[in-house]
Length: 236
Length: 253
Image (cartoon, rainbow over all chains, first blue to last red; front, side):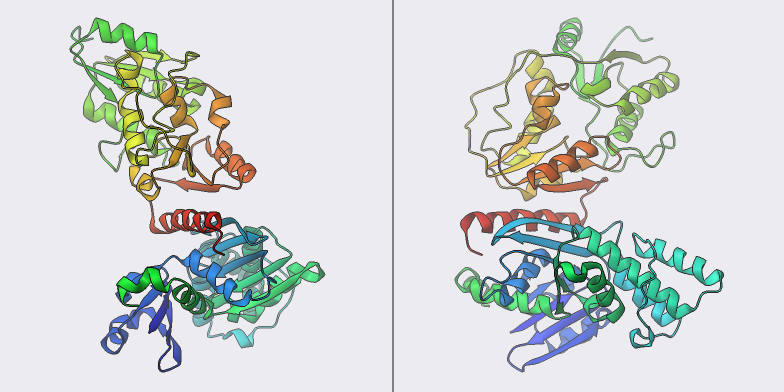
């Protein structure tokens, strides 16, 4: 069975027969479909992969946490997924659904903006050093404006990028409701500056847990395992 | 001004006595709800871009539908922006007869459609299409009722597609419920919701967004703001809220 988490700029896939997983650029989806038949997909670009079943991203995010929740440790949680285009949040309290949200306007394009700027300045995430300086930004576009203002003052590009990523982490934390325990999913969980700033914001009040870039794949698998009877007609 | 009135436009919920007066005076006139987007992309250079699509729609409809007379709701019963729009329209259409109406009706018609088991889209169609019929007493009140499982709070959305996402046992709250009740200035009823997972909807750039956001926070509901057509992310957010709420209710987690 092939699962695809199809974001706006990258798709993550997992073949559970071959035990193979990888990230592909979303522009290569046609090439991918020549050799793969997708069973289950989620994400902004899910439809282009022509899956048998499309799952809602927020539902899958909740399922990704359920994978870890074997001992009731995560009966109460706040999980966010920060990818290229948007920020999603789902909250449970005492094993009951509390709320969810999905930000596409202010706060959008976080991952895409970071990716774009790093490529433009020929910088990789590992080149950046975490510093606590933060820019107040509410979306990728405003973030770029703020970065260029800082560069015009003579600031270092790497420090400016670090400041921008901190600002995005701050916005994501605020959007999630500033919880004491936060689980992070999506591409930004692999950005060490973003992660370090979230950890700094949480401090000693609670815990930060990275679910990783493939967590929505885990969530889809969990969903399928728990809904086999309902999905039988789809031959999944 | 034309003496023959063939088309009567209205915005919001005009006072029922006013509707009866003009219904009896011009029995053959066609009534047009100017809040309804007959064209889905209202274009006007007169208003700022940051104007609610319903307000843009009213102006657009006056251009295209050319009513002879308009019962124009303003004030709390509609919104402050409508008060200013009425001024603009008077300037732009000096021959158009505009009856300004700040509806303070307290007589309740009841809300059997809002609490019925009809599909949510059907509920909204009936509530918005029966404004005149309700005022003149021509409506069927014998509608099968349901217990609410979900709620939709707010004004009738510009794009009714959002309503297709909800199950039949979704009850209607907020200003749309006031519409059905014929009391568009009843803030207490506007604030009322049952204890069910509720989507608090507002048009972008509408002052009712303040109510929607605070009520969503108070009742742990989902705040949704839409400008014009429903986008895929907002659709997915609502679908997830309904699905996760339903899963929680069934105790599957």
